[in-house]
Length: 290
Image 1 (cartoon, rainbow, N blue to C red):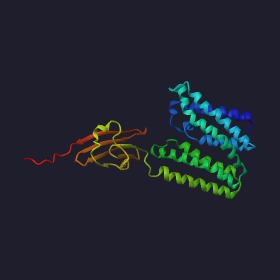
Image 2: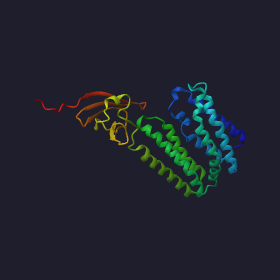
Image 3: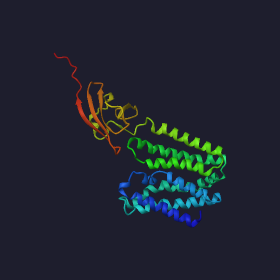
Image 4: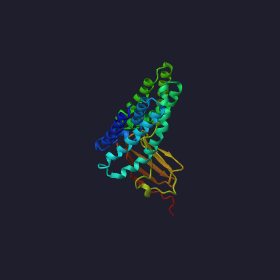
């Protein structure tokens, strides 16, 4: 990896994502994920590192790559983004990570030794790729084929790195098993049985309908769409709605005074949650007639 090629790669890696992020209909697609997550940057960093002859060279070139490419992404968007120069307010966290690429790439160069410790050094990157893949898969399950290209890319990079770096069959086998284990672990901790969104039931103006001095019980008419759970730390009444798929269901809340509130809870394609008060019944008058 010559310095000339590195500089060209740095400019292209900054300009191309910046342009894609300016195209409205590509928003929240796999083509703009590079502006929010790490899969492409991990891949490009490994490409640079593995094409360097010394650890210091890898550290310097990786650092310069990020130092050029990251600001360029924001600079390209300045004329087209409503924030204009304010878009650089998102850059400080990336700048901090750019600084960390120097020691990270220095250590990362030792994956080229293709030893057991090389796989150990590579494992945090594999973990991050598995986590990214499953975090996007959570959304794809809800609204397919949302970000499926990013998920496939993450999985492909995980196995390409193992198969492309190592020559020892034992290390390749261990690396592939590690990839499968990571993907499985993140699937069950991030995707399987997890809600896509949750909200306090008093969301969006319903607060006036709920009396914080009354203890409620809550029931959902369709738990495939929304489940109601009690969280003692949630104010004012402790009941939360967890949404598992898009649709509309009724949530019936019964107060300990006998009052009843029926909400229509909706979760749409854009992850928007809406509660509408559908029916309301006052507490019954328990006083005996004279």
